[in-house]
Image (tube, rainbow, N blue to C red; front, side):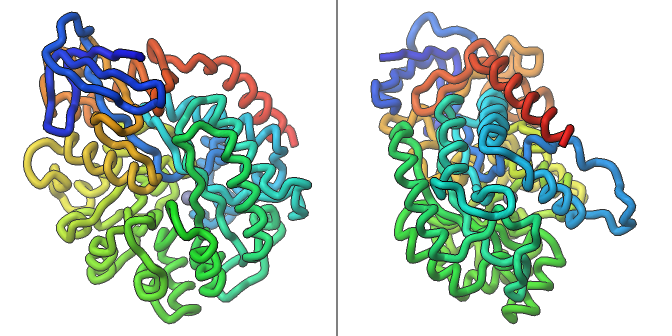
Length: 449
Ligand SMILES: [Zn+2]
């Protein structure tokens, strides 16, 4: 039994002093006690789940920030570059890039990740001998890094709205439902080697890439576990889907897919007021990726209206251009402030940092289908410890610590546990050097190619 002591801890009933948390051998929280002597100066919090990532995209972070010859340079030219990069990755490189991204997520305070995985096949589009080869590579990376994994094999059939054929850059993504069923089965088999907190759900890439029949087939293949889909990220996508299906993407999903608490709608940026309220009432999580959405110029999520209607959200690192849990929350809030010329719009009352953190804890755990999100017995021990001697936190109490963490200093956690696995100690992941070296070798090879 591991016992973690902390001078302050965020429990379901609020902040507590001098806490001892006992971890069971199964990776779950066994006991929480307060008023225990000898606690070190750390604040222990439930750790966030990163609800949306494409780990391979970490390899192109920072490489798409120059304007190209196309004066309409935008999301769509970013996507072209991503395709060119994705076309060359070997299975070994996929694994190396994923492990490094997972190490960075853990060091940033994310204990778990939902990997939205659509890079399936060999270059050119032929299946690997084992159809779920690249799912298994991502799983191996997650196992080595120790991050909690919700793996989401992703159906991707068409190259665009109107059942357009796949472009050469999309060949590695493509599956019809039959091919996808074999891949999903392979991923489920591979996941049996993972620790018991790992899960396999499923995803549809988008209503551009998946037709209504494909979406229905996917839902039938995944009778339980998380279901994710990108929707309404860009105005062009909304227009394309409206032209093809006769409805805006979120409206269409609400009318034609069994949207409920198993679902996570990624981005949901461009919604009408009615869509916003309907999505909130569905119980689905809105999967917000504020840093990526800012980087890609997607637009701003209508957070105040969504929250007023009882909506749930979490945050994801998506393109992984930056991996930083506090920065995701800060970017989310600053976007709303800039649009609305208002401050602290996402806190019903009191602390914005606390409101953001509580919402992202609950929404992230729900989106991953993970028994986590609170420091309470029976849940997976997903925890992070912040050093109370850090200049950003020293002398602060209660929710002011979270406000300072999100908005003022964002110190990295000194320790992180994922389902009881001690994955970060003294601010470092034990595989930081080895994983960085493998990542850099992969990126050098990709840049040389
Ligand atoms: Zn995405």
